Every structure is written in C-alpha cells, then in structure tokens.
Length: 324
Image (cartoon, rainbow, N blue to C red; front, side, top):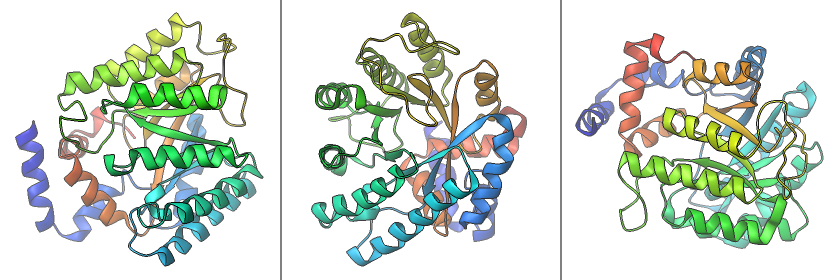
C-alpha cells in the first residue's frame, strides 16, 4: 500500500488544478465561510456538530496573522449569529508560533477570549514535532490567563504522548481536554511509532490514559480498531449514551460537549460510521476545513502522508465504501 500511495502522490503535481479541486471538494467545505455554513446546515440534519478550521498554517511574517485573527473573528460571529453547534480549531503556527512565541500567545488569547464570550470551545491543533512542546506551552499560558475554553490535540503515534497527557492533567486537572488522533505527520522512528499496528496501539493507549485521568476525550479516528477499542474502554469506565460521566475527576459541563467524550470525523470520511454512532446516542463531530488555501492544504496533506492518497482514490472509485 505504501508504494501505491507514493505513486499516486508522485503523479499529483502533473494533475490539472481542476482535478485536485474535484478531489478536495469532498474533504474541504469550500473556499468561503458562506460555503462552509451551507455545508454545516446540510449536515446538521444528521445530528452532527462541528469543528471549523480555517485553512492555512506556518507563516513567514507576523503581519500574516492579521488574516487569521480577522477570519476567525468572522467564524465566531457566524457561529453565534446562526446558532450553529460548533467550535473552532486553530494552528498555532498560523498565529506566529515559529516566529515570536509571546506574540503568538497574545494572538491566540485574543481568539480564545472572544470565543469565551459565546461559550465556544477552541482546539489547539497539533502540528509536526518541531512545535509539540511550544504548543503545549501555549495551552498552559492561556489557562494561566484565566481562560479554560481551550484544549489540545494529541498525536497517538508520538512516543511522548502518554507523558504529555499525564503532565497536562497534573497541571489542569478536570479542565484538561484532548482531541486524540493517530496524527498525520510522518515522524522519525526515534520519536514515534511508524508501523500501522504500533500507531493504533499507541493511540488506543493515549485514549485509555486520558479517560483514566478524567479528561474530556474527543476520539478522532476513522479506524475500526480505534473506534472499537474506544467503545469498549468507555463502557468499562461506565461511560456512554444517556449516562452521566461517573468519573470522580470528570470534566466540567460545557456547551456543545458530550458527557466526558465524543467521536470526531473528518468531513467526507466514513459518514456511515459517524451516523451509526450518532444513532446509538454518541455525540459526533465533523472536522470541517475551508478556505482559499484548499490546494496547498490538499497537496501538503497528501505529501505528508501518502496513505491518505489511497483512501482518497478508493473513495472516488468506490464511493459506496465511504459515504460522506
């Protein structure tokens, strides 16, 4: 499968831009906020809620942060005015983390404080390993400034993830809130698991650790072994649809959140599984990216993880296996 994925990615630069757009439209909610709102209104009928992501990340000058600050302000206004059940996800490098960490923290605080006015949650997305610790430092800094409507993504494949979960829980207690995923960035084997089974096992371990520590746990995976393990882990901890979170150190109740956990899916991926979980009573959330930088996003994601190309190709050739 690795050879197939790399072969597809190798051909992508030769593909016409309109073809890449055709592929991307399944996974990106359009170029504008208005287009993203239309997608959310349509999918809301499936009892899904959303995490909105404005496409774009690592910038070269601090002046570029103004676009993201302004656009996320528009997103927050739209969520509130349209009564959408949604929170937002931001990439710290889009706010200057690799240029000036203190300036980035100030920029992110501005967004988080604005979101808090309407009880909207903010997720710090986790990027590649260069910024793992700096992103965790941002989380702590924002909490130190009195804002708790912010959580962190954890990449299960990283060897440090269990330690990070425990350290964050030691510091933040029941306010700790994680989105746990396998992680899309291909990291060296010195710091991460690189085989499929190892990545799945380490992701499951991270989910178990976060549940055991009383955190809010957003389970972000399309893999059956992770979903099945998570369901079993939730059940063994007395958690599930219609149940009050029984953990003595459980997180505070927040607008738009589940009872201690939720399941998350990327837009356009395994909609059938998401709908099945929702029909069973689990809170499900769709990660919904939009923006003018859809082409760069699509190409970068495929280059970083060629296996994604295989799933995209399968979805296009056999759409019945991957309903949106």
